[in-house]
Image (cartoon, rainbow over all chains, first blue to last red; front, side, top):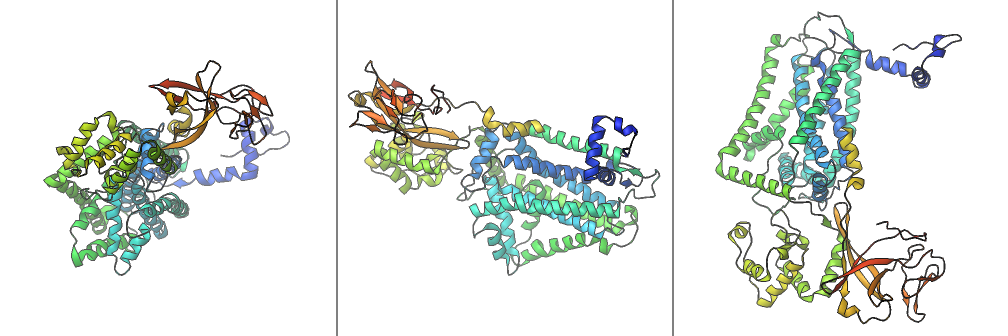
Length: 489
Length: 146
């Protein structure tokens, strides 16, 4: 890292241009010192593949920030437009599906690497030796990452996102005294709605990432101040600087991560379900895989004991976890010499795994749940097959209605009937469809007026199962309704 | 990783152009008897990213030298003002900078660099249809810009 000092007759005057640029920058920005601080950190026992998790997490977080910023080019955080814009990203925007998948799977990858990093820190006893603040900063980062995953899950505003977040926010009601107020605060009202989406968006895009940046800086500073913990037992090899070998290993891990995400995004792109329909009473919400153990755990706690299961027990476990370096003050780092701590950690970890497995098992075992989840899966597949349907702009609706009224009074009357009968509640405004019922646009190309009349008076079995009721109208009113439906394009 | 990011940003440039949309102006029977330029409003459907925008556009239906129906854009080729037909003067007069045009759209005087722009039109099933477009202003030639 040393750069030759310039001077009269010095070789540096004949140095290549890149060295001159570096020297110019070094004199002004202190690059040499910066690089020395960043790269020459000693690693006890030398570089190891086992030490790549921390930098892997930083890389994944930066990947999430970059892909998130680019996705925000097309995303609109409003209950009216969020789903349309995510559908647009997924189905139309060049590279949109790929980047959305990298972003979505990236959150799972963060959880996986986070668990590896935490487990390794625990088993290596790397929280010992005046590293209490380092551990606390790490725990806060853990919670912030889980917060990112929770808030990001709602943003697509599809059925899965809506109902999973409804359940997630309902848990807050269990907090004694202030539970309902907390829930209303997070939702921006009593029910889930556009204010919920705005709040989650602000948390996901501004507040939590800002906190993560701050705590990453604190975590890295404290890590550098305390120094790398190194191997569990006395190192057999001498200390080695971070550059070059550990840098190469970290880069290798980063390439493996992005390679895996890229392959997954290409071969198994993430999907999007139909738009959230709060009126759907059948939908069975399920959280992401890393929240499944908590989801299953909550099933066992009902009534007056709910607060114990939902708040007290997880709170105690979280507190013990947080205060670990204060509780376990022995310098001993070897895991086989810390049987109580290691067994407890392993038991919690295995317990979470079992709870997650039970959740999946319950879903598969219960025939009603299995049928419903299969139906939901089919709905998602069907939605993904449909071409992207752009949303009619608000200002255009008035123009279209006015034109319809002047051009076809019968259809205009039919539109009134359509709204009076609340057909739009299921088939959507302008017949654009919703999660509850298919779109009606372009239906005139599929059915004749006579067939439409028959279907409205006597819905087919499939229509009845979907919730369609027979339409009981006078002939002239039904003709008006059909005229309107035939006008929907 | 940079490639999909760049492709995502460049999507509006990479996207294939929207197919030509024809807007109904009116039935030929209704329009065939016109003697002077007749103002009509057409509904134009455009894609604006994830939105579908329906907007009203004013056009003039005229008869060309051969007596065939033709359509003029009401947008002044000077600075884009909306040009009205002034029946008393038997000419189009732009209210912004007094550009004057004949009933067939030819430039009569004023600052506009060219006559009013003709829009592509056709008759389908007895209905006159127009392909609405915007043209570059302040140039003497007609160049489509959208």
